[in-house]
Amino acid sequence: MKWSLIIAGLLLAPVVAPAVAHADPCEGRLPASAGETFSGVVRHIGDGDSLCLGPSTDPATWIEVRLSDFDAQELNSPTGRAERDRLSRIVRGRVLTCIAVRGRNGRVIIYDRVIASCRLNGRRVGDLLRAAGGREGGN
Image 1: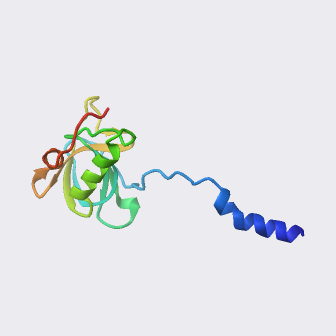
Image 2 (image 1 turned 135 degrees about the horizontal axis):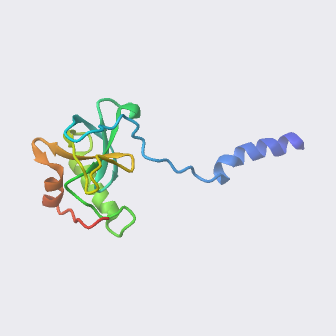
């Protein structure tokens, strides 16, 4: 009886255990100074104005970026998921070239993301988002 209860508990644990919330997978070294350039394939989209890019499929090489030229609606807003999906359609799997810039507070890194101006084939990502109907107005 005792063993059957233990086995039943082990089998049910994954079903009743709460799902673990995972933070973004981007773990690469962030550029620390304004003007530092970097590039890579877009590997992950966080929301409508943040993404991760890196040279390989290893998240330890991915740099988390907050776009400096577009301020998307927050992900939990009514249009937040649509804004994230728009950014994904435009840049996911494509190579961006970025340059770290200072934000309004004068810092290059904020909330574990580098603030950067990124380009896809020479065009600013913010301009591409606006041309595709992206709406600004986040925090």
